[in-house]
Length: 359
Ligand SMILES: Cc1cc2nc3c(=O)[nH]c(=O)nc-3n(C[C@H](O)[C@H](O)[C@H](O)COP(=O)(O)OP(=O)(O)OC[C@H]3O[C@@H](n4cnc5c(N)ncnc54)[C@H](O)[C@@H]3O)c2cc1C
Image 1 (cartoon, helix red, strand yellow):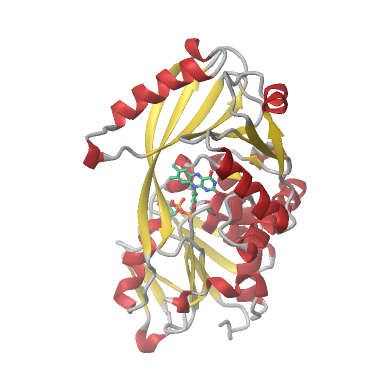
Image 2: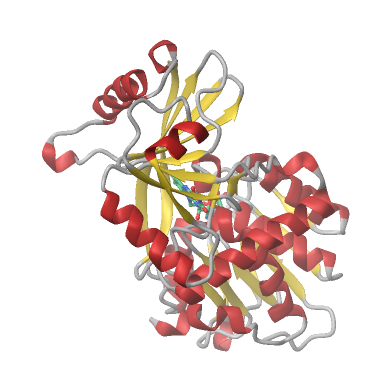
């Protein structure tokens, strides 16, 4: 916890999570240095599907945190303006298994979230581009998507305007913590002194913290992001099907998230790309003329229990961890709450289930 009057805070990583923490810390007048081994948004953030949602929450407290995060995106939109690339388009679930959709709706509606069932006619009215939609679907109107790179850059810019320093192309090789108290981070060519170190390094959190004997059980979970050029908009919402997620990012670009190939079963990235291209051609009206323009592998930072890891380490004084999947959804809430915990030396109740000490 922070004891110095104006501590030197180093944020390792300028993905969307580190960028948001730096933005909120700098906005509170803290002394912040962001160190990024590449450029802002160089990691998982650039290859995210970037759907902002409550409806994939695993339990009620997590759904509440995600719901708060959606509200925090509205706040950031008012603070930062259109540069975030926010699109509150809503989500249409069109999964083949009616029972799965019904279960999702029943659980989330019982938790008090805005999601309701659709019949086939209603799905067709909302998404006329879907060929042969399932008999049961759902809509979550309050959800949306973001441009994750634009948002990260806007947050880093905002942090810099509020006085934060950015060190790009600087890889942190180690965190110094003599006597279990952070004192500096090590770059190739220099040492940067620090009273607080925020590890927002995505999948790299594990390797950075292991020498301090701090466990951050983050797995690397790959996924595919495919981009298609389309003649006009084929879809109006984020659309979730049984085997992919789709959304129009502009009038002529469709983004598709698909599972990484099952290599054990002989699948390849090219094979999945061919399958998805063929599915776009048969399942979407106008999809037959869509052209695949890129296929990228993104690597999700996935905590071993699926929930975020956020807060001060109980082992090393001054070490604050922020590693999670769904970082695009959660970033504005995590950023504001982390800044409160660091600057105000308070514990935010919404984060209490996600402490690093649970492992
Ligand atoms: C295919 C895919 C689809 C996804 N879809 C969604 C979705 O729809 N909705 C959602 O909410 N989330 C989604 N996610 C997850 C989301 O993208 C991540 O949770 C989020 O981007 C994590 O952000 P981050 O800032 O923690 O990590 P990152 O974006 O990985 O940022 C970490 C940064 O730290 C830097 N770094 C690492 N080590 C060091 C070091 N030693 N020194 C200096 N810098 C370092 C990296 O270069 C990187 O820029 C998806 C992810 C993937 C891959």
